[in-house]
Length: 200
Image (cartoon, rainbow, N blue to C red; front, side):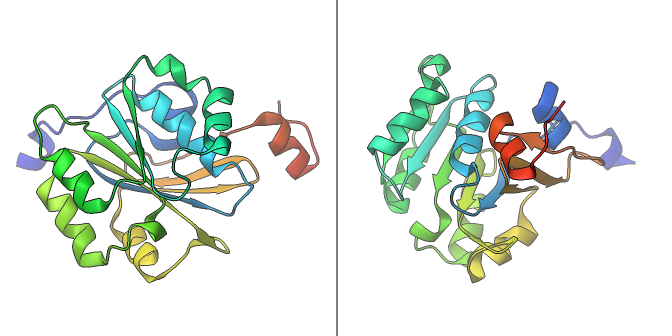
């Protein structure tokens, strides 16, 4: 078959991220959601730090901006080790972000925190994907129970290639790049306290 013989580029993940996601294509969209205080920000930073091994990453901090709490999280996760491959954007509007991405040599991986602060609708989400088909968008969302919060987040959940729910300092994924996803431990001590038992 033509599809089976086609060359769709993927990257080779290793370790816990491979167990969580598989070997993904770094294009399209992923959705990450979770309740506050469950490790969502730290997971996002850990994921972005790992992705800088493969390409440059832009992190648009729409919700917090460049804040003291974000600075602390950057220090804990040692984000300086990304060696300039991570670009931090301070509440950049979606229009300005799109203009940035239209430029040559713009970042190919874009994390947006959070979806609820973008003000976009589903049509605009699809248009962004269609305009930049070779870029990967990581959408971070608030949660409503075990689901992402709001109508657009719930619609996006059905479209994305990787769905990641953060709870109790673990990340749980449904990925089109893996048949058997294993949970990712964001913070071992926190996960142990949450579960009331030690993690081997």
